[in-house]
Image 1: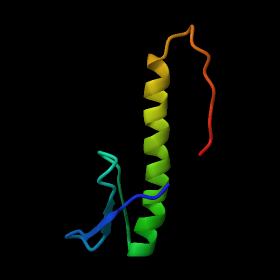
Image 2 (image 1 turned 90 degrees about the vertical axis):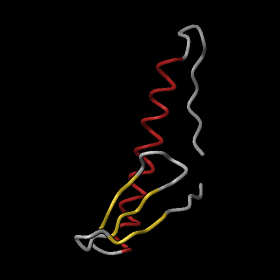
Image 3 (image 1 turned 90 degrees about the horizontal axis):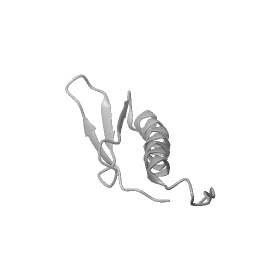
Image 4 (image 1 turned 45 degrees about the vertical axis):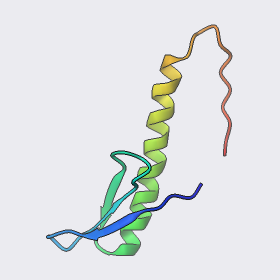
Length: 69
């Protein structure tokens, strides 16, 4: 998947990376390269957490199948 990421330099000099399409998905790094690597991990964690929330709302009678994208 492809996401747009905004990069902004914080007052402390760190680079903050935010994914507007995923509310609350934010990370940071000492430079742009580190911030982008860290935000990739944040995206994975954000999507996993959302999947877990959705899974909890599914009826036990439904068959659950995992699909990799």
